[in-house]
Image (tube, rainbow, N blue to C red):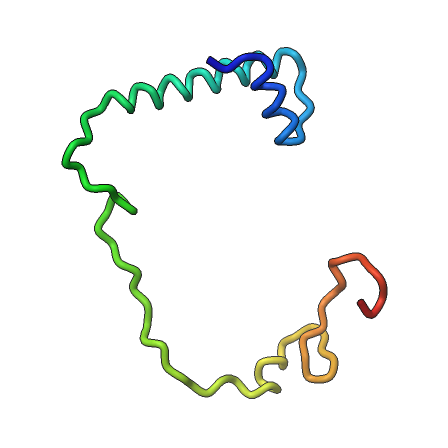
Length: 99
């Protein structure tokens, strides 16, 4: 059973600000989830092999082999901006200039 203290701790950890009604709903939702897991514990899993995936799939990748890359000019020809033979993009991280 999820109590009020548990809900408030989850709220704090998730950095949420919940109304009293939302806290009540969250507690009820979490109770239902835990009830479902308790139901699953009743299943007989003796002899059932653990699975990584429900389907028997394998990762299909190409052979790793060295190939020639595009010439720099070809790679940069459609770039909106370049600088010194590199792609130039807008700054997305704030901080000191040159850092």
